[in-house]
Image (cartoon, rainbow, N blue to C red; front, side, top):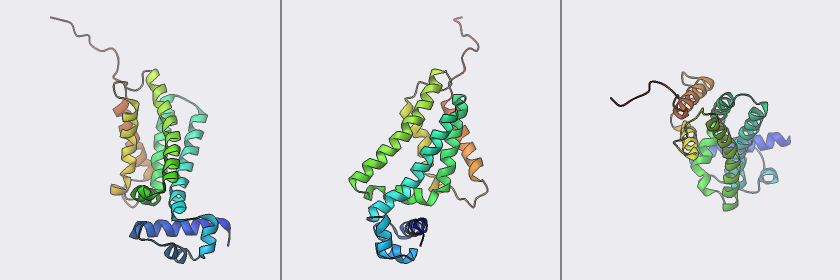
Length: 202
């Protein structure tokens, strides 16, 4: 059996079982039976359920960070770059909706070292995302009356709740939804236009 096949089969089985019956209630034996592999094959790639839960989310984290790096490296106007980044992270979150749902529901069960690694990886993404907003603020594009961490939390909180209301079988495709959420976010952080009618004392 090919290496990628084992990893993919085990990961797919784990996601389905974790989603259906919960992380704590799923045994390694159930995972390997659903994946059609031996425990030895699974333990060759994943030392524990902890490793498996982390790997499920790590795939999405790695993909989103590589996309972010690529979009930023292409350059361009700050507003266009941030818009592209927002659309991408929403689309990939939808692509990995089952994985994200399982992880956010079970992440508190990760070992402390794994939780620290997730925090570090998220911070790397967050810092680069924050830098884009800061660059836009310096150009007068985005509001400065609200702290950047609040602006960022406002955007990512929508992603964390996607699984509670979005259905891939619904009328709106992922790209349209990504554009709508992005437009709402960018409108909400846009700086007030300067100038306008001057108000004077009567």
